[in-house]
Length: 401
Image (cartoon, rainbow, N blue to C red; front, side, top):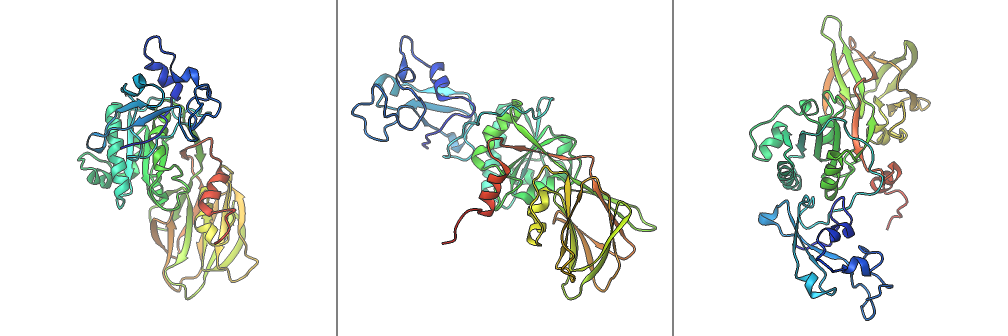
């Protein structure tokens, strides 16, 4: 299995120096720009064709497709002595067999957690063979690092492990949670208490606004997190309570959105809304969305709401197909307390949380929404802006064929 790649977290010239033979200056001394693809100004470059490479070529030998050791040889055109040497380097495997590992960009200086990472939660998109294979590689690497994996039931079954906990308890039982899946998989992890546990989302799904990192970034990002070099982004969550007279109050946590809508689309709902005990409006619509900035690219966007920068302290209230066109989306302070009550009940109406949990509502129920005191923390790439994510995911700037 061949791969021309950089070793995660360490420049090629540094690796070269680790294994330099005695009294040999090596190509790192002879070629300025060592580690680049080609060198037109190399002192030894006369006669080399375009595309000749003055750098290491990394040959990855996988025992049964997975190993925690690289074997490295040097490009044969430099010298026969170098090309015949092989070195064993104690670094992690590439995230996907045969894919190049990627060196972390400069600026990975944010602290993930003041406490050492001894337990890592692992969650898989269980319908994905690629996620399962990557999960097996991750378990091998965690074992090499002497870090205990913590699995939810479905992921444990997929990976052939017996010990597991509930998915909603992963963040409470881990120092870091790695999600191998899509945004839905990550959202399922954020239902419970977060308690400051960082979440690393690796995109094995389709769109992936939350799981923004590609598969080949798993091990570089994992090592950055373990070494305290990763960058965290705080994402606010909502606390949702449903008060029903004569019943216990139910409380839930939401990262994306709260949606009230019907099981059928034949008749409109009538919903009244108060903000901080002040009457706002009576909405006649197919439903109502209350979205965080993180969730603004989900149902809110499809319903005509705006995209919010994810770290803003605001939330959006967006009616779904309102009868009155002047009922437009409204931005509110994230410190607001929103109360919504269903005034008409001609058919089944549901409260849906992050598109994953649904509960029937009646005219007796009061839905109260406020900022959660327990936000989520996502590991992000400081070299990639949110606008770059939007460009890639929403195809901004691309022209149709």
